[in-house]
Length: 198
View 1 (tube, rainbow, N blue to C red):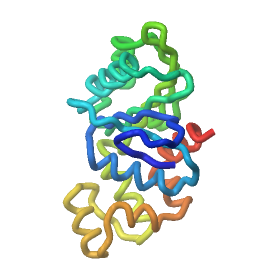
View 2 (view 1 turned 60 degrees about the vertical axis):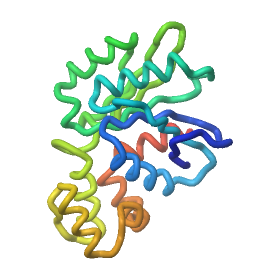
View 3 (view 1 turned 30 degrees about the horizontal axis):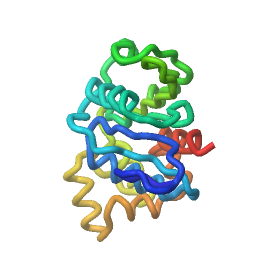
View 4 (view 1 turned 30 degrees about the vertical axis):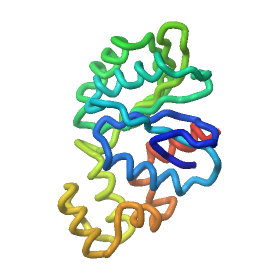
């Protein structure tokens, strides 16, 4: 499975919108590479996709402009927990853009699946929440601990310093992770990729 900014000739299974940008793209791209297959996730570079409201607006815009069978294509918002706030508010915010039905939600409130309708277009929307309390750096810090047995503060600076000291980057870190370590640190992302790869 691959993640790219522009579609290739592969089968597109999902469009991904990031609630907070490039950092999350690099992490998801590396995790996708751990999954074999010819399917593709596309993350078009849309303006202003910061936070939940703008991410939902971006999905709505994609639904409005895409001329493909969206029922077969999934939409994903990958977003830090700090941008979600209250779960009831999140679900209410979705109804500002779509008619929606909640299909699945995990106990940790990190994996949400909705059937959505906008105009005559029906599709599936996943909201994948990163961070246990705040952000994706918490997941990365957890992964470092699982692989290296070292605790690293869940901040970009601390993670960068650790990776620099080891002479690796994010992609190398994820490549070195066992499936078990990935499941523990990024269980919601792994579950998403398995589900959309079916």
